[in-house]
Image (cartoon, rainbow, N blue to C red):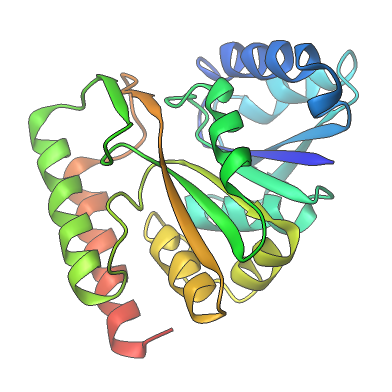
Length: 236
């Protein structure tokens, strides 16, 4: 089984299109995704996101919705979905589907053997950024990734793209002890995967910036840098 985890916070406007795209692709891929599930993890939304998603469950048995009782952060939502999943392969993707679900095929080709984690990337040769983020946000992202490479994760060029595939074993091992509930969680799980002896493949994907992002350039960038400092200090 393939599990697709979608963390969602106040995504009532964008989630319907994302769910339609996921269903069309996964239902239309034949035997490749014959057995799959989609898990929406609502992170304490206040705009009816969970109710909207639950209405889709009646006609889509592969969909289920998990509710966080309060807003805990993207990392906590992905953790909930990863640990509740049943799939031998577990993908998490952003609710705005900035990376099209069709790019999953590239990640699946790269996973296997000692490679238990494959990350979508906007910063390697075969990536294609079709719609860029605003300049300040893109600069902050690049600066963070450079610091991350320097301090804890050498060789990985884009750890923040919200499109990552794990084997079930790696997902359980990396997410069970998660201590970073916010946007800095990616670095923690990737560092843990590497220290547990798994290879991490970085695969270029298509990416399109979506308007009305839930990321605050200043607040969340500062929070992520604090998470990085904590990670570096404790060598998690």
